[in-house]
Image (spheres, rainbow, N blue to C red):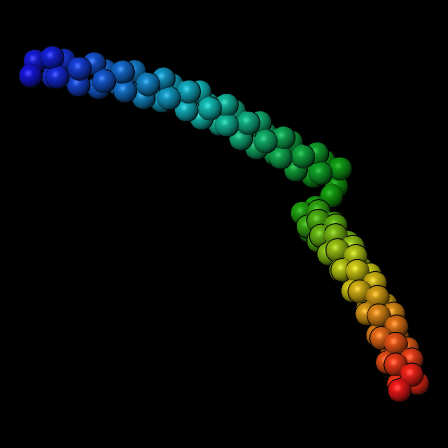
Length: 109
C-alpha cells in the first residue's frame, strides 16, 4: 500500500513539474504576444500622428480604406464572374456537342 502511494505521489510530482513547465512556456508566450500588441499599438498611433501631421484627417483615411476594400471586392467578383462565364461557355459547348450527337443519331435511324 505504501509503495502504491509512493508511486502515485511520484506521478503527481512529475505531472506537477510538467504543468509548471507548460505554465512557464505559456507565460513566456503571453509576454511575447503582449509585446507584439504593444508594438502594433505604438505603430498604429505613430501612423495616425503622421497622418495628422501630414494634414490627412480620419475621414480621408477611412475613405481610402473603403476604396481599398471596394477594389478587393470588385476584383474577387470579377474573378467569380469570369469563372462562371467559363463554366457557361463549357456548358454551351457540351450542349452543342450533345445536340449534334442527337441529330446524328436521328439521321442514322
